[in-house]
Length: 117
Image 1 (tube, helix red, strand yellow):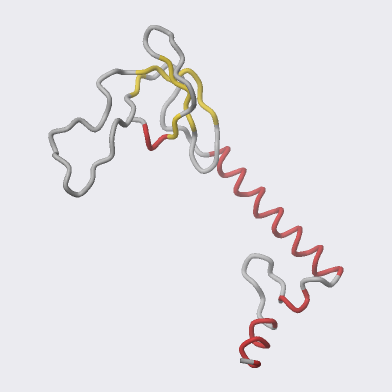
Image 2 (tube, rainbow, N blue to C red):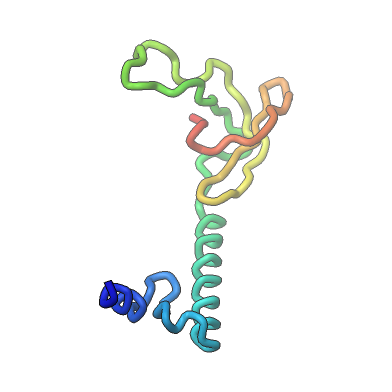
């Protein structure tokens, strides 16, 4: 067990790029913090650059139900009513959409891409 702990403490971590035994040293701690902040910034930048699947004023349908392994295949999976995308909210990892009916009544909440078709 002692060798396993020593081996772990002397191996660089893939996220922090610092060995655990040196994680609290002044210079290593600053390097670790910069690396983590850069990684978070790049993830945020990717989410901002990700293209939205639907655009403003596009007509969409909302997912109505989830199909289980034994569900009937003739049941509709998407709503019969169409909705209009009012605006796109960029969230990570995918965009969310504010919807309204064709009459202009706004639906409460936002919907992620996976619930729209």
